[in-house]
Length: 487
Image 1 (tube, rainbow, N blue to C red):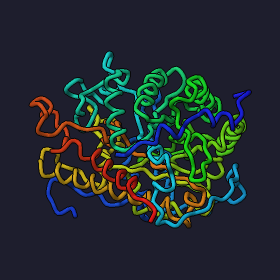
Image 2: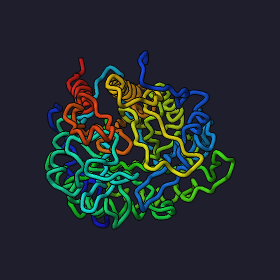
Image 3: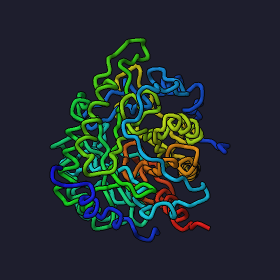
Image 4: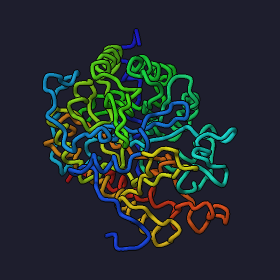
């Protein structure tokens, strides 16, 4: 961005104003329990027993494959990270931030607090022709690729009235930003960005980007791709909607997240066959790309944060990432303190996601793959009889409890003065997700079970009695934090 100084750029940015607004026991039948929570000693073996195929992405179908965490566990990763390589330090030394006591509430630390709660958002749906709703053998509009039926039905991500409703729901929940699933220049998702940003801006929401595995050699183009996003959706729009996150000391910069950033070179399937991972990227290549990116943007921002979705501290550090942002809802909150401590030991940031668990669909027909197995419902590692109303109610209760547990755990860890986030004045909570219906992680309202049509009930959707419970739970938790004041 030649000719634009950091000082003048940030002065005209107005990033904060858009977010300164008022914020608003398994003793039951119908499920089979699967042991082995991630974060315990049996993590890798547990995941391999539940894995789906090889976990490789298919960019043409927008199939993301395994996350870095899942790929690491599939390859036999340890539940505890090894000692990080101290020789590869974080590339951007930052001055220390005065750390307030943990009792000082979030609202007193960050005047733009809503912007620090970010919904994962998927702008990849369409109706003419169908996109995503027809995955895995589904035949819309009644039979769609979702474990529960949306309140809005199957919609088009390009429809302004849909985006308007989504923005209202997110703003009412107290969330101040969305993290767009982005599949490269010229993709369907890239073509939707301007419309999404227009609507989000009008509702006081900011937009950032989640870089998906849009090509196998993404490691050779990352800097150019992020610079394209910054210039196309930041500079060209005069920074009317893009998220620039402010730390506790007022220093500001954009933040990006990568999916499948840190991968093993090879994986072995259930038959013992070794397969090369097609989108494997060397740590040094990531570091070179991130160095170029930071050099290009250093005049405009105090810092540029890029987070990878991995639990391997040594490789995150060696690759030049600022820290990690875990995506997998199977990584249980009870394991987060250990991961936070490990990353903090190398002064790396961490962002754990608020989530309601996982409730993915089963493909039709079943894959012709001897290594394929369905993933269970999480939390609880349960295979549920969804025709049982009491089982659906219990699943909703477990999901609600996971929302509270994950929210409270990530907030507590990020306010801990002994950990890296508080020391560096950084706070960021991703919410997984607003509308990933295929995996059943969505907070977007579902239709109440009693409102499903006979044809929809016949499909076997998992809708609970209260289709709003996830969004309302999140709203109450964010409102609680926003209302707390320093004593």
